[in-house]
Image 1 (spheres, rainbow, N blue to C red):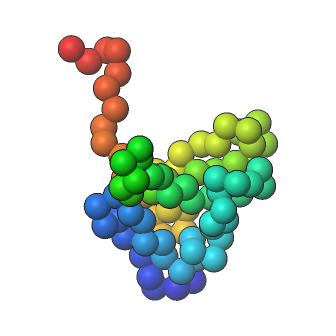
Image 2: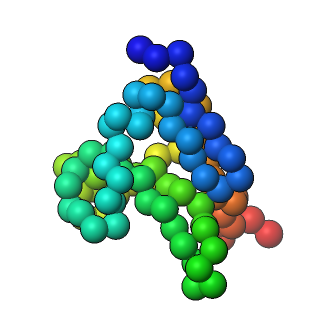
Length: 88
């Protein structure tokens, strides 16, 4: 296992060596299962947050957002805290 760790720089993810080897980079255009990286662009064509998603089993059509690296354990959270209906 590599000594490298994932890093989050603003809203972009720099994956560790193991995660980088595992990622599918054409996530927006594929239905393959596995770990995928989504590079988000907003309507003004500025870079939004990167998201690592997992497609597997019952979640192959609607992937699950991954908040930490399964290899090095570092946080991959590039999104802001989301409001819930329970918060006032």
